[in-house]
Each structure stands twice: as C-alpha cells, then as structure tokens.
Amino acid sequence: MQLRRFDHVQDFWQTSQDYLRSHLAEHNLLIGIVQTLLHDPSHYSQPPYLAIVEDQGTLLAVAIRTSPYKLVLSKVQDLAALKLIGQDLQQQADQIPGVGGLVAEVAAFLPIWQGLTGQVYRRVMEMRIHQLMQVEPVAIAQGHLRLATAADRPLLLDWFTDFAAEIGEVVSEGAEQMVEGGLKRQSIYVWDEGGAVCFACGSPSLPMAARIGPVYTPPEYRRRGYATACVAALSQRLLDQGCHSCFLFTNSANPTSNRIYQAIGYRPVCGWHDYAFMAQETP
Image 1 (tube, rainbow, N blue to C red):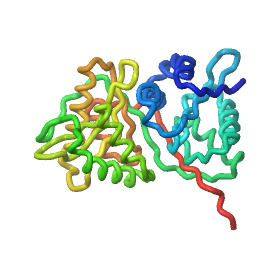
Image 2: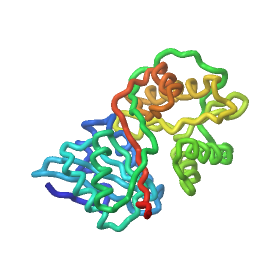
Image 3: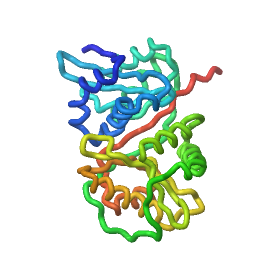
Image 4: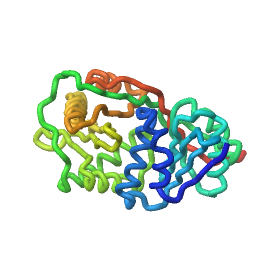
C-alpha cells in the first residue's frame, strides 16, 4: 500500500476519475472540486492537496484539500489507507481546519489525526447526500427562477455570509470568493418575486450530472415555499440541459429542508459528516 501525491490536477484526475465516477453520489463533492480546479484554477489561491492511496494498482482512497477548506475524503476501500493520508498531511506541516466525508471514513480518520497531532475535534454537521432523477410535481410559490447577475452581488454577499454563520462555518474571504466565482460560472440562481427572496447554486459540474447547493432563504422570507420552488425549478432546468440526475447535501438536523427536498424528488443515498479540528486544551 502506498500514497501518491500529485502536483498537477490533470494527472490526478486522469488517475482517479474512474474510481470517483464509479461512486458518483458519494463523490459528487470531490468531483465538483476537481472540475473547478481543472476549469477555473484561479478560484483557489493556493495549490491543492491531491493524493491517492493504492495497492498493486488498485485505488483504495482519494483525498483532496483546497486551502483554507477542510480535507475531503472519498469512499475508502481499505480504512488502513487513511493512516497514510494522515501521516502525509502531518508532514506537510499545514494547519487543517477539519475533515468531511462518508460516515465510516470520517469516524476512522478522526482518531488517526488526533493521535498524530494531538488535536481534538467536534462535529460541525451531520448531513445526507440526496439524489434526484425526476422532479415531482409540487405547489410552486409566486415568482420565477432567474440567473443571478452582478446587480445581486451585494445581497448575495450578505446572504452567503449569513448562510455560513447559520451552519457554523467560518468564512472570512470565502463569501466573496463564492459569490464572484458563482457569478462568473453562472451557477447562482435566485427566486424572484418582486426582487430576490432566496438563492440556490447549481451547475452540471459532474459527468452527466449536476450538484445543487448551497440553498438559502433569509429568515424574513421563510415558510412561503420559495426554497421549494427555487430548487424544483433549478433541478428541472439542469435535467433539461442533459443531466441524468442532481445531487445535494441536506442537514440531518433540519427536518424541514429534508421534507422539502424529498417532496421535490430527492432521495437519500448516504450519510456525510463534517468535523472541525481544534488545538488540544492545556489544563
């Protein structure tokens, strides 16, 4: 069993794409990150961490990190591979804010990282990956879906910042980066009823599939069906563009959003956990 680290995303994608595509739902976030690195490398200010673990030509695990974000783990065929990833990351002497991945993989990585670094960890969010292949008919709120424009930028900056604060993620430069990148890629949509009332991001960033998220409605516009209408319309638009399915993440602790997405046609595929790392407290 050995780890290979890549300096060039093209080489990394060539080596890992068959494995990542073989579990498309589980790997939709990783593939989306790789596609951004391939087609919009300026989106990230620092070189990414790109690694695989293999054994006699069989790929066992994939790990990606784009600073300043968390480490993202793939579905892992042999959990022993995670120790090699942890050891390699520790040698990079880089501060990692956390890790995200499938439930079993993250649960196995956490004690490895704590043993290597002494860092403690806390769960940030427990999520589920959902997949949609057909939009179910739902009651649609007043208004219409439209692509966000530069005129929406100030509002979107506030909303992205509020969204991050609400889910417990710290984004200092991230909100501006996400808005600028989304406007450039034309992947941010808003539901408009006399003005923008919520937003959803979505793009066909996977092979014949799309990713949707984040989705956010400000408190003053909630419980009016805007998010349902926005996600349903955006999902249908992406299917109409040739995607065979759409993927999104939901917060397991939010029964409202889970109910909304399942009514639209999203079905749970697997669990996903996000954890944050913190320095060990001294007595």
